[in-house]
Image (cartoon, rainbow over the protein chains, first blue to last red):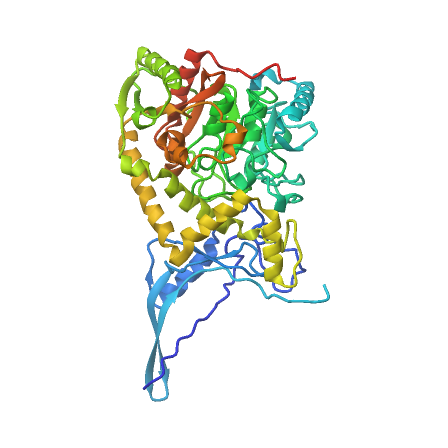
Amino acid sequence: MRPMIGLECHLQLSTDKMFSCVPYRYGALPNTMVHPLDMGLPGTLPGINEEAVRLALSFALFFRMDVAEKLCFDRKNYWSADLPKGFQITQRFTPLARDGSFTFQVPNGEKTVRIAEIHLEEDAAKQILDPEL
Amino acid sequence: MRIADCRSFEDVCRAYEKMSALNGKLNALITPIPPEENPNGGRLCHVPVLLKDNVSTKGIRTTAACRLLENYVPPFDATIVEKLRAEGAVFLGKTSMDELSMGGSNLTSFTGPVYNPYDFSRIPGGSSGGSAVLTAAGAVPLAIGSDTGDSVRKPASYCGIVGVKPTYGRISRYGIIPYASSLDHVGFFTTAVEDAFLALQILSGKDERDLTTVAPSKHPLPDHIDPSVAGKKILVFQDVLDNTPKQTKILFDRIVTSLKEKGALIEEIRFRKDLLELVLPVYSLIADAEALSNHADLSGVYFGNRVEGTDFEEMLVNTRTAGFGSVAKKRFLIGAYSLSDGGVLFRKARKVRRLLVEEILSRLKDADALVAPSTPKGAPLIAESRAPKRKDSVRIADNHLVLGNLGGFPSMSVPMGLVDDLPVGFSITSNLYDEWAMFAIAKAVEEYTGLCGRTKEGLL
């Protein structure tokens, strides 16, 4: 029996926020880069960060993946204090691209790693629970 | 009352006084806004406008008639607020509605019931009841509402005014507290078809912040109303008429005859009965599922009336239990049921929705409009509306307006006259983006009835 190991990797893209499209800067002062959509304020609607889509497409093409015909997003609904909208916008059913691979050299020959799929989504920032506050 | 009647800031202040006095009897306001001069000129210069309380107004409380949002003050304006303000409008208040737009009676606001100006023992209809009654009572010439399952057109019928729901995507929903994203439309009330046409010009347009809005270049809006209905093909919705009481039918038939005399081509049609019977279940399963998801932000963490608990989950439960009324809770449960088991029912409902829309589209695409009485009768009594009869609610005569939401078709209600001293409306639904045909027919109906500008007077 051989173990099969899969890895789920989250890659933060070097661009503005995915759906509110406001800038993101590491180390900025708190509450200076917040859009009402990030707060889940009622009535806000998501946009699409086109640069993020471009970056993801570059990744897909580099790894020779099959790119989806349409860009579709789904809501993953659950309750969490770090999830202001009460759902995460992700691509559960229609990932951006599928079935890529990456071949590289190792001491005794070549190895190929499959990339099953990539999809775009928003991720919450780090949550710090401070009982003092 | 007409848009053209408002010429000065004094007119606006007078409107505010009248509105405040009327509100004592109608209970139509959640938050009055003392008028401030708007330096912008424009097509709504010195025109007092009301906003349904699901429309975000920066710095002004916006509650969607929900206890949980009782003290919520948005830090931004809805796109339509910016558009109206840019044209010179002066906002006089945030109007009452059914909680989170969930209802057709305007009995579910935390501020209490709204009363029909034609009979205080009756509902105005909902969910945009507050905007409807103040327009009907002549306080303002234009009031904004929203229409998810008839919530502008039904109150327009019950209050004897013009109520418009344009094609989905014409008007930006950015900043409007939602019910169901695929069914919500911004709509509005006026007392005259021409005023409604102007409102549509001002409110519509592509908005970068709402990806569902359409570019005017792709689907241009007409710049005037076609004065003729000659040659227009009008389909009469027989399934609805089969269940319409005689008095309402008489009013309706007279109007259809007048359209025929003006050269319109009238054809009676029926749709698949098995599909029509599913309108309400399809609507509920989709709307309530979308609402459950949309309102998952109402948790008390970042905003809203929070009720504390020992941990996040307890706080969440306490906040939402205290913050919502029973109708909202019931609809969230329906939504949860719809989405359960991987969303089997929800997906099925969406398939049936497509069948329903294709059924209507199959005839509507070759016609100028589908017409019917907006409601079979005038407004029901408040006492009857608290526990509506299940049997009534499945009839297509009571629910046909929802088809405009399921398909996104432009649809409006124009006053027909009175049945037993209560207003009823004439409903016109056209093909997607065909506001040209819809308004032409509406204008012709208004010309025949002579009800242009009519308000309910003598209330004070």
